[in-house]
Amino acid sequence: MTRILPFALLLLAACGGTDARFLVDPSPAAAESRIGIGVGTLEVRDVSLPAYAEESEILVEDSTGALAPIKNAVWADDPVRAMTMALADTMDRQSSATVAAEPWPLETEAQAAVHVRVSEMAARADGMFHLTGQFAISSYDRVVRERIERFDITVPLADTTPGAVARATSAATGQLAGQIMKSLSR
Image 1 (cartoon, rainbow, N blue to C red):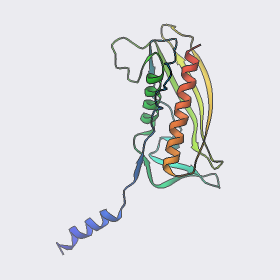
Image 2 (image 1 turned 60 degrees about the horizontal axis):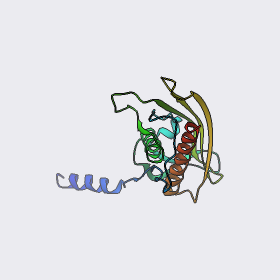
Image 3 (image 1 turned 90 degrees about the vertical axis):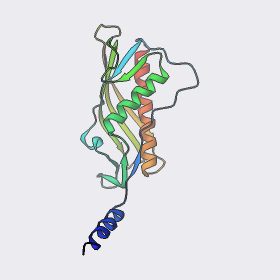
Image 4 (image 1 turned 45 degrees about the horizontal axis):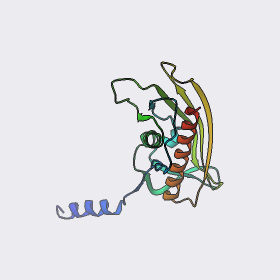
């Protein structure tokens, strides 16, 4: 009996399967020059996601309208952290500003902060990845005009595999970073 128990536990562990993990990658730096924006330093505050998008499972809308997890596929990082870091990394690489995610790592405070509140982030049954919500620019010393702007981004899904959803998520996040930089360049 004592020999069977360890073997049974090993067999159960082997049958459990391992979830594949998928990244939300920052957009690559553009070959052309950086986008000039109105601040030298910018803090990206933690992105606010809907409850369903904060979960580790990668979800896809089915024909009934339900968001269902893709079997054996999860995000490689906490979705809030991944989205926040992807935005900060993209804007740091593509803009003239020094950009970092909160908490701000330097002694001198950032000149401005961006707050992103996502109302929808889903791979929908219409074959599109939807990212909608609003972002706010705050500037404690009024270096730039404070404002709130809406965003409504759709990216085509090649299919509903977890890799395709991850690529669409990364592309939509890159487009959002572009909209924020454009807003700050005015």
